[in-house]
Length: 233
Image (cartoon, rainbow, N blue to C red; front, side, top):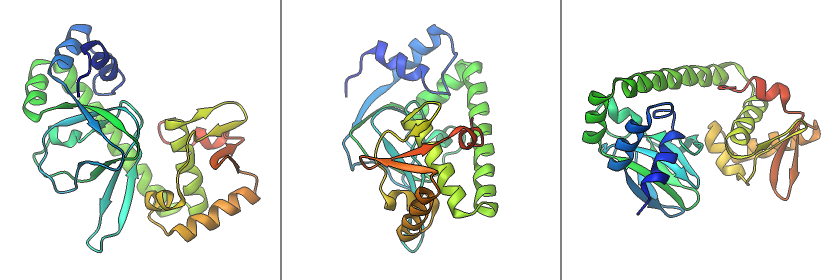
């Protein structure tokens, strides 16, 4: 997929691994990045695949998921645009730890492992960004584990809806709109529970006046306290 260098630079600047780097550095990285088109429903890479480098999510929507030995699927994240995908390949040659699938027609940038290793050697600032990003990922993982251990399902669901809304929707003083429809099955995968449990909790949250629906899209009412307690905000 052909992406103009100027557009590549814009996408790279939106990625936390590359933001705030010098213009000349971004230009060099953009020149080595390849555009990838991923149609809806197609897999970018599977859990267990050999690592082939780093991807940057540019447009559309993708999900990151894992499958256990019983074949159960758990959605780990629906990353926002600009998110790096497969960044662990930069610190370990291990196979992919998750599967990335397009939920909509999507575009990405691909930087091969050898290219990224060379860039990290050339640019100390890029290595510092990588360390900071991985540290943030570790903190977020710890927060997620705490939520699984201590929060009830209703609170976990509300926090997940807030996270999705902040990444993909719109926020004003009164309402956090998720911006698009997320199926009950998808929400269930994200939280590791059944669709029936999600259905019950959504009805409960509606009855409590904490969420509402507009043309099938979930809206969080009076979101200030929820957003304040959402990781990264």
